[in-house]
Image (cartoon, rainbow, N blue to C red; front, side, top):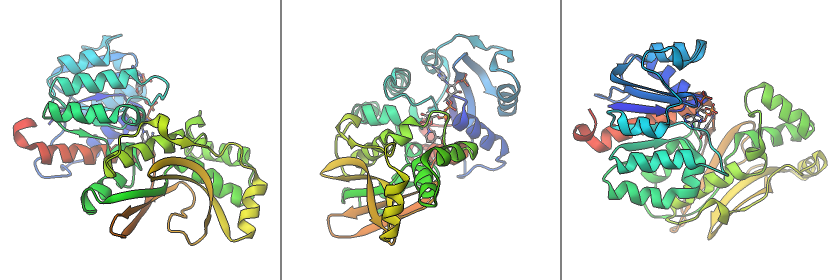
Length: 336
Ligand SMILES: NC(=O)c1ccc[n+]([C@@H]2O[C@H](COP(=O)([O-])OP(=O)(O)OC[C@H]3O[C@@H](n4cnc5c(N)ncnc54)[C@H](OP(=O)(O)O)[C@@H]3O)[C@@H](O)[C@H]2O)c1
């Protein structure tokens, strides 16, 4: 399978590193060759396959621009149009106010008949319905398992292990950064102390506003509800409140009553994100940077999955799972 990779940051570079390290394919017959890569400075496209080792070395040690054939200032969209590829992998930044780059790349790719695997939450939370329709209309696959949960396959579990079309509501802890901060505040730290510790440990980004404001959780519940419950939500319809104004006093007071405060994302007729007091025995009471999600079906069944959330390497593994799914579902006719 020939792939174009957009974005060589925490996720994109981890994906290349996984490909570099992996001697044997994760599913039989799957070999992923890199046909082109883009970062913010331009792109590289190869008639032949581009060596993953050279790419990783160049990106880590200096810049892609030192590699022969690099097109300085070239746009990702041009790369998608020129490269001979079966699949485009989007590891571009998430920008909720303007995801035009990801949107343009996704629709260009789907229109050109290339499968699309994306880690970008914003573009899926804002344009999911039209993107899925475009993919179906063009006979290509759109995979987005890396947008929610990274290390834990929340989307795949919901769509493959629960009878399709039966999930009616969802409730979970979907943001590792805010969960880490709430966990540490319950242990006595102030929000500022918990946040700086999360930054030191690589759990919080330099700008954690999407995590603390609840927007990241809102994007994830939109993606989950649209995919598993058949809704057509967009991000703007989620009633969202973050954890920014919570005080250590409120959290310790909850603790004294045997409760914990968690940032809960839920869908049940409407989608909401808000700090909520829950019982310590609640199945979604996970600590640190873990995530958890409960799925409820119309027939009264419920399932809960918990595990690692985001992180460059976990998310890259989710991208790799989606590439394997493309290989298996599209078959050798469409990927080689
Ligand atoms: N990191 C995580 O744990 C995680 C988890 C789940 C989902 N995600 C999602 O995965 C995506 C990637 O995240 P990340 O953490 O890898 O981001 P990142 O570290 O900020 O990397 C973004 C990459 O995109 C490149 N880029 C920026 N603008 C570009 C443009 N116009 N054209 C081509 N390339 C461009 C950057 O280029 P330069 O290298 O030149 O700056 C960089 O290589 C995001 O949408 C994020 O929400 C991330």
